[in-house]
Image 1 (cartoon, rainbow, N blue to C red):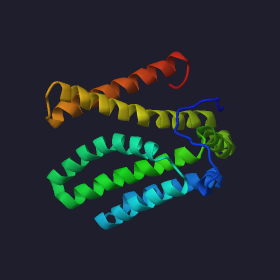
Image 2: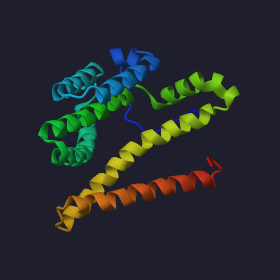
Image 3: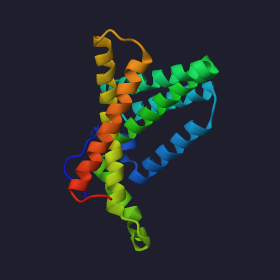
Image 4: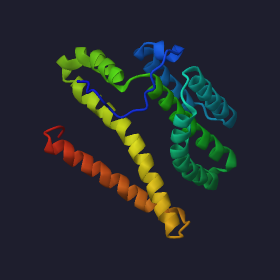
Length: 202
C-alpha cells in the first residue's frame, strides 16, 4: 500500500515522540482532540494550546513548520472566531480560535514525528481483521491519505483567495468566504472525478 513519497511534514529525529509507537501517538491525538472539543472554557483552551506547544518542543518540531501551520490555520480561525464574537461574545471567540490552533498544531506534531506511510500501514494492519465484514483497509487508508493531503491544499486555497481579495482592495468577509467555498467544492469535485477515472471509489 505504501508509496515512497506521500505529502507530509515528517522530520526525522530521535526524540521521545519519534520513538513512540504509531498506535500510541494516533490514540493520543484522538484523545487530545476529543478533549479539546468537549471541554468548553477559555482557560482550558489556553492550557491545551500550551500543551501542544510543549509537545512540539518535546518532538523538536521546527519553528518554521509550526509557523507555516499556524499561519494557514489562523486565517480560517480568525474568520470563525469573528463569527463567534458576533454571535456569543469575545470569550467564546477566543476559545474557538485557540482551540482550532491547538488542534492544528497537535496534528502537525503527529505528522512531523511520524512518517505518513507508517501511519497508513498501521491503519491497514488494524483494519485487516475487519475485511471479512466488508471493510476495505486499503480504501480507508486512501481516505486517510486524501484527508491529510486536503488540509494543506485547503489552507493554500484560503491564502490565495485572501490575497486575491486584498489585491482587488476588497475587505468584506463575503469577498473571501464565497469564492473560498466555491474553490474548495470545485477541488473536491475534481478529486472525485480523478478517482473515478482511475476506477477508485463509487
